[in-house]
Amino acid sequence: MSVVVIKPGIADSIQDNGRYGWQHVGINPDGAMDKTAAAVANILVNNTLDCPVLEMSFPSPVLLFQQQALVAVSGANFTAWVNDIPVPVNTPFIIQKNCVLQFKQVKRGAWCYLSVKKGFGIPTWMGSYSTNTIAGTGGFKGRFLKKQDELPLVDTTDYSPVLENKDVYVFHVQADALQWYLNTNAIPAILSKDWHLLNKEAQKQFQDNEFQVQPNSNRMGYYLQSNAIKPDHPVTVVSTAVTNGTIQLLPNGQCIVLMSGHQTTGGYPILATVCSAALSTLAQVRPHEYVKFTPVTLRYAHELMQQQQQYLQQLQYAAIAKLNELFSAYAIH
Amino acid sequence: MRMNADYRIYALSDTAMVIDWGNLINDDINHTVLTLFHCIKQENKPFVRDVIPAYSTLTIVYNPVMLWKQGIENMEAYLRNFIETVMGHCSEEVMQQQPLIQVPVCYHPQVAPDLLAFCEAKNITVEKLIELHSQTIYRVFMLGFLPGFAYMGTVPEILEMPRKALPAQQVAAGSVGIAGRQTGVYPFNSPGGWHIIGQTPEAMFQQNRMQPALLQPGNRVQFVPIDLNTFNSLLQNKN
Image (cartoon, each protein chain N blue to C red):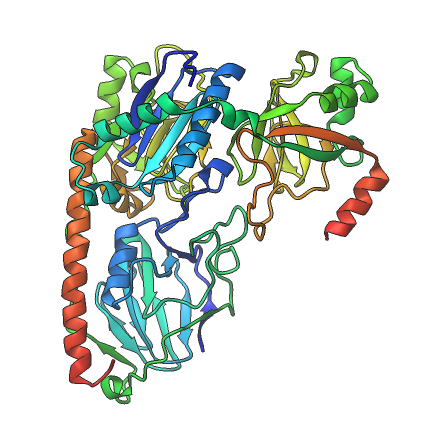
């Protein structure tokens, strides 16, 4: 039994926390654009954090569930519906056999995550479920989903005692995930390698600029439009490793910030790298929206990351307790 | 380890530290980069997620959560110390053990769209180009751009050629190119700006191999000329 793609979205792919250990041979880590949301979605159905989730952009797919399933959506709010019933984000729900999950409009954000209890039944490649569309492998067939694809379900729990004959059962619990999205007017970033190539004025300009995310942005990177930033002298830099959040200065004075589908190396000057704890916030900025960057220290970046980890851990404990309570009331194990 | 130049260590991000020997392409410096790459790999530290060599930098991607769990407070100091300790006892022997990998290449205009124009621009015969390109033993400086794409050098000076002003929209998988004094093989069909002078029937990247990428950082590589018939039959056997 599977989740069947009735109608594909524009960029639906299986992702997880990313594929590490192979960047020295050019295999990029990939992984969810918003890893916090992917984690929250997994936590809400009591999964471990390494379970594969379905990442969706908008337009999103229309999905038919061939069997009952415990699921959650987190990240962007694309207004999820099960048949003719609206369902909330950041809340676990049980969907009835032969019901359809779809997303009708963008309320907030750019990437939405669907988790299913026990994950999707697909193999890992090089230690990860993430889809690598460049090598055409990993995830589901190494590509974005197409019409009539079937994502196998693993969980076979009978949820009928909870569902009765209804199309959907929504749990009375919601994760306060929004607190982890930072202010897009002050995205914290660590200044890096080629920052010194800018004079004082250009450095100030980078910090004052409002950067608009461009429509040609994708999983590899977000193109940013702002007042052009020019170094005093034209610069050539030799290729070096880049990472998720790296802000590169292009020859035309515009910037690109690399996202989770980034290449492993790049040959443009590197001004700064967005803090790990702010990557989810950045990922959820939609085309035409604006961001500003604020330089922070490495120590501060690590503190932010630690706080985010603690939040996820607390959420995980709370969700486990709550789900166990609800399930035991219905004698589901 | 012989430190043949000054280096600096800095943060690329809150999960990556860089050892940087300066912004240049130089055999000796890259040799140092690759030596340290192999030594850090051999340490097999669980907090090290990735070690990424480039021409003159080595980037270490680490997992801060794992270091917190070990009770490490000043992460930057800890990582600097780790890097410099490995540098201290790292031996260049790791580079002498690098295998020589032979890659068959067909230098024929039918599979190498830029071959004739390249030879004309350089005023050499195709035979001379084959001789020059295939008699050099190259070193894999780094991989990047695409999974399995190896940047190799150094190409004989007479074959030096700046990359194309306008990249080709489609370069076939297996295409062997030259850009500057580097040579490389496209593992996938891709847009590309290198001058294509040959093609290999060998799979440079195969997802189901234990090591999907044929070439690893530091490997020595030699191209072995094959004719069009051999190329076609090898390609057929592969599919």
